[in-house]
Image (cartoon, rainbow, N blue to C red; front, side, top):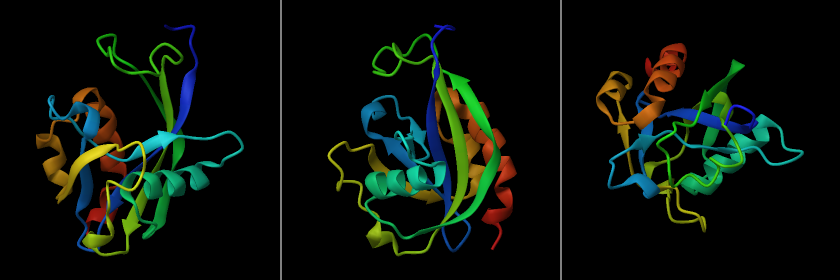
Length: 157
């Protein structure tokens, strides 16, 4: 798989007005109990900022967000060998992501997981940033630790 390219992708840690972070149970991994941050591919001729706004709207059914910060570097990771149901696995070796810290400026009722044809998440919750280490995020644990440490300043209100 090392000869395959990385898929360009965006991802976000979303903070609410109280400094808690948004985490969601992946629709396709409910049985495994894997939670995740919103993320998605960058379309052709789309900037990372445009992509994160589109992805958040598609996955969460709202555009009530403001970008707080864009992480300077792109972060890459390889798909684990044991992923069998990932349709991207045979096209890409992994993903290279541009991360954003985002503030949710709406009301919880604005978040709708069922508005897009490809439902990403089964349910969601606001948690304290330090609770992230107790949630099953699968193979992205180290990545989430790194990025949440960088954006931790937004969890303080």
